[in-house]
Each structure stands twice: as C-alpha cells, then as structure tokens.
Image 1 (cartoon, rainbow, N blue to C red):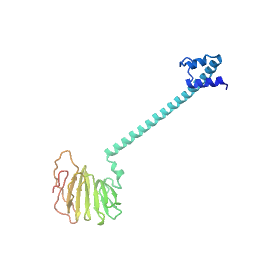
Image 2 (cartoon, rainbow, N blue to C red):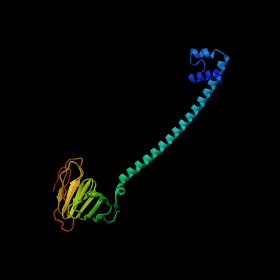
Image 3 (cartoon, rainbow, N blue to C red):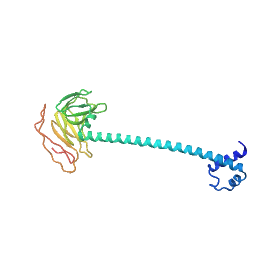
Image 4 (cartoon, rainbow, N blue to C red):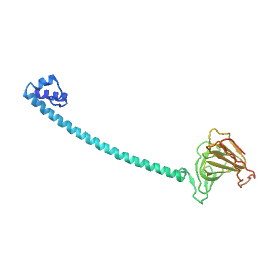
Length: 255
C-alpha cells in the first residue's frame, strides 16, 4: 500500500466512508481535489467501507430479530406456565384439596385411622381429617389441618405436646384430649383425661386457659366484635365431666 492509499484509508476511517461532499472539511477537500489518484483511492476504499458496514448491519439486525423472537416465545411459555400454576392453586384452594399436600397423615371419607407418632403418642383420625407433625424441636407440635383427631399423648415432661390450628394452641398437661376443626375458622377442644391448656392464636390474646375434663372452643376474630357462647354437649370418655364449658374469642373467655 503506497502513501496515497494509506492517506485515503485514514480519511475513510475518519469520515466513516462518507461521500466527498457529505461532510464539509477544508483539509479533506484540499487533499481529495489535489489529484485524480487521491479521488479514485478515496472513492474505492469508501465504497468498500460502506459495503462492510452494510453487511455487518444486516447481520446485526438479523441477530437482533432472532433474539427478539426467542424472547417472545419464552415470554409466552412463561405466561402459560404461570397461568396454569395460578389456576391449579385456585382450584386446590377452592376444592379444599390443598391440605392434602401439606399433611403427613390423611383419611378419606368414611375412613378412621390410628397413627403412631415417633414419640409413641397415638392419634386417632376421624374421616376426612389431616395432620402434620413436627417432633424435632423443644416441643412436640402437631398441626390439625382439617377434621377431628383424638390424641393419646406419651409422657415427656421436657417437651410439651401441642396441637395447633389457625385459631388456637392446645397443650396437653395430661394424656388424652380431642381437637376438631369441623367448621370454618373454629376449633373445638375436649379434654377427656387429666387437664389441658388452651390459648388462641390471634394477637392480642388472653392468657392460656387451663381446662379440666370438659370442652372449649376457639374462633378466629369475626367482622363483628360481638361473640356468643354456644354450649356444647359433653363428650364421652374416661373421667369425663358431665358439665361443659365453652370458650370463644376474640373478646374474652366465657364459661
């Protein structure tokens, strides 16, 4: 490459291959008009420069279009999957089947089943009932997700046995009691042997109530602040009392 070609290449790069009259520049105009060789060299190199830019630009546009199409397809797939997951969640929630996915033990309609926990405690599940247990902590915790269960608790003074629902926590101070969630937002507890401690889950809450062989009820706070105490019939069982106490939240304990 001679000196004229080198100068032409420098001008092409500086002007990005622009036509001679596109970008006024006194120095370039003087060099370009100095000889026909200067003009021919610049025009030839500039034409090649523009062709290279055009090829690179087309390739870049094509790649951008392909990437955009991929993103659109991926977005449609993600949207379809999200809609499917949301539909399944709504269906499981409204059908009541969600609790089956959370449970360690479940009974079907018409089925009564006894479950022996790792600590030796026994749980008699009524039909269409479900529990989830966690005995690994400082307390032995069983969550009643649905239905009704009779608990015969193995003694362990160091780790209390707690049955939890969204409405209340029932702690066994004796050996045998029943917890049921047969109505939405309501938990019934029946102490059949010795005594138990019952406290609501809502905050603020009254102190735990110690219940001897009898029954108690806890409800989630309703839209209206007023509550009414409804007597419950005594449940049969060893040492069961013939009297009955009913306790409802959110306002205060009633007996």
